[in-house]
Image (cartoon, rainbow, N blue to C red; front, side, top):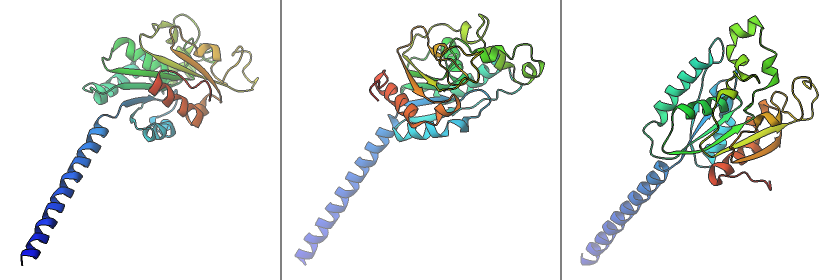
Amino acid sequence: MKKALLILIALVCTTLLSLTLATDDQQAISKTLSRQEIVVLLHGLGRSNTAMWRLASRLEGAGYEVHRVGYSSINTTTDEIITDITQQISDCCANESRPVHFVGHSLGGLLIRSYLQDNPIDNLGRVVLIGTPNSGTGIADQFRGNCLVELLVPVATALGTDETSLPNRLAPPYYPVGVIAGFQESHTNEAYLPGRDDGLVPVESTKLEGMTDFIEVESGHSMMRYKKEVAEQVIFFLKTGRFNQNQ
């Protein structure tokens, strides 16, 4: 009887210890998850937030909490888009104490710059711009005067190279920003895109005054958001503030 009682007490103690350890483990996991840094992703012209699914998945695999911000660029002005994304970013991140990073592809990068110019964030982390026409692109210049384009996609004409364009009206960054440019061997748009380019944006146009780091990857403009190399460079910059130039 005494032996059975001792065994019962031992089992109870073991169970209580297991429950305590399990609770501690759950609290540790919860604490780790609550400390995840946030990445806000913005897509480019004519896309939706689903266009960034592959990059979002890779960022989540690296331990980030990802928020994909979507917007319509059809029959919508630049100001309307900025108002839309501002509300979305505010909804997901306004009360956050964790670091908030931003990653944008093409037009998405310009929208990030515009947002951060007007909405300083105390817990701002790092920013990565992928194939973003920071000085505009000659392709957009060709749309000026095209009534159909200006009616259906007015934001497309705002990406030109003149001084009134969206990219050329933005201030230099006050935050750490890495720029990834794509390049491919193509002579299709040589008349509008001087030098190396990704098919839509010249490499030189992606460069930004005050940028923290810069790197080129071999890729066409649209495919950059899918490439593993691009994702790895984005993650490396978010973690270290520099690109992996040895990759």
